[in-house]
Image 1 (cartoon, helix red, strand yellow):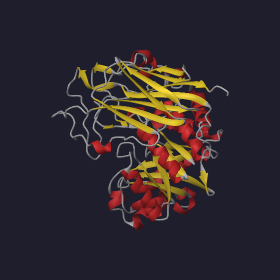
Image 2 (cartoon, rainbow, N blue to C red):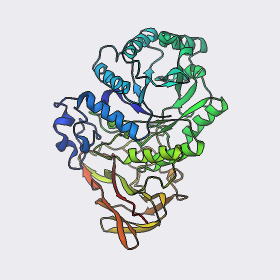
Image 3 (tube, rainbow, N blue to C red):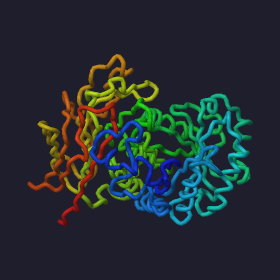
Image 4 (spheres, helix red, strand yellow):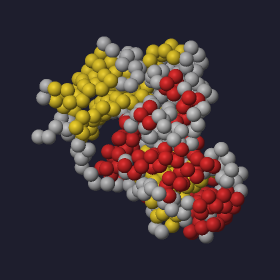
Length: 477
């Protein structure tokens, strides 16, 4: 089962023509420049301009998109106070209505502070709206599937079993208590034992985008689930960059384009994971969306479809198209900023990889070929094999800025060459428009130019991942 974390606040179809991101789409997103600090850096894809304001039909189209890409369910975030009346209540109902007529169902994700919630009232509010949409819920082993995610450390470190059990029984009273549901509980990243709600879970999950989702905490979590003989919901995230509207960017987890995303999916396949959660479908404010957006098009969703197919037994060459993708940050690390104080601050507990310039080229090919990459006056070439290949050009880290980065470079945390991946280190990557050409038998089989040049200046630092994809049907032999 593959499901996506679906944000309540970015429901397709629920916006009005007056929404700034809609009314000024071209101004904000159409030129490849940083959007104003007052709006998200990602938004619905330019290829589907009606997604934001298309009503229930736009929501249904998103569920159709999930189905076509092999996604089974949407993990719908429902917080205390969202129901029955809030600005999010109608969008939540739209998602449930879309799921009612779709093979893709909803897994309610209940995120709350155990020290503050009225669990019985919260549970009743959720149950009352779900009764209106009985066909919307995802079921597993004959029970409705729910996910609970704690919002405070006390849940894992101080919530005693009797109170945790009572809270869960109150929360799910409409379903006969905790025994009436199949329950996934998110544990703290890097946890070495289960506590709190997790003691009563049927499966363990882990929330990873803002943390060290590149490896260590995810493996720790899976090993914890295995030690407890519990099912694990493997988390996969495309990245994390907290560009919340109205706030200066302040948190960044260096994904190296698609590298960490690919690493996580390869781990999923190696472990033959029974449950996978893509985090997220549509969180534009944190740049973790896989839904097609203005900044990365369909690239992350196409990669997800490829790996979902492999997870379910499809061969590595089953996609039948020659595909190339380019990923890179919107700006260089040395970009001149109108506001020099608006720099990335890398907190150790968030991410240990320093901010560097890179260009990531991913190919999915039916036969070996040569990849040619140009970035301004610099050009590179490399032979790649059939199937998945990745080539990352990484520049040397800049000098740590006294009022900016808080963590020095730790080279061991960079991607390294091996298997499908080649890493090339260079002194510098210029601000320019990256271009890729895939050549076989003396002819170009795929050509693409990034949707945005790498910028060397801007109003503030903007490290949003830009991605571009091109494909061509494979020639019949």
